[in-house]
Image 1 (cartoon, one colour):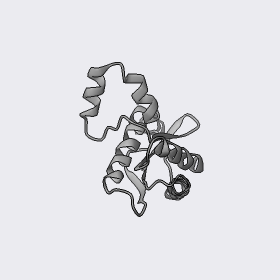
Image 2 (cartoon, rainbow, N blue to C red):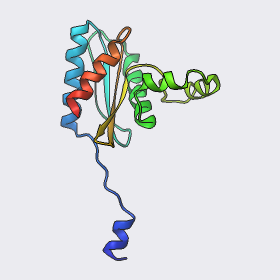
Image 3 (cartoon, helix red, strand yellow):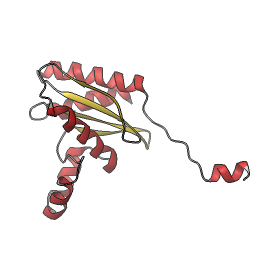
Image 4 (cartoon, helix red, strand yellow):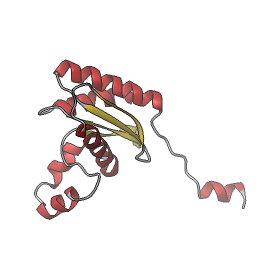
Length: 145
């Protein structure tokens, strides 16, 4: 095989770094504290693997898994989970089908992360009330990208 043949079958992938994930988590925790929320936050790399996570003292244990599901959903659909849920809510069969899939979360708090138009990972936040998860996730995403 020539170098040109190898290059034609290989692509470069960009992904969030651990340092970036830690910056995002710190921003989420600060924002959640301001909001009086006790949350868990999970940051995934572009392959969907957990890069970093944190659960605040007082956050319910299940929040970590839900945060991971929110991040995973946002990464797969490349759309904030609240926007995706809103877009499909009229199709009850689709909603029911997706909701039954492991790792899917069809509610607010998951955001895909991009560098330009290139996906680099996702962040998910769970445990807050109302819009707390989305507000905290946005703070985390802003600190990363």
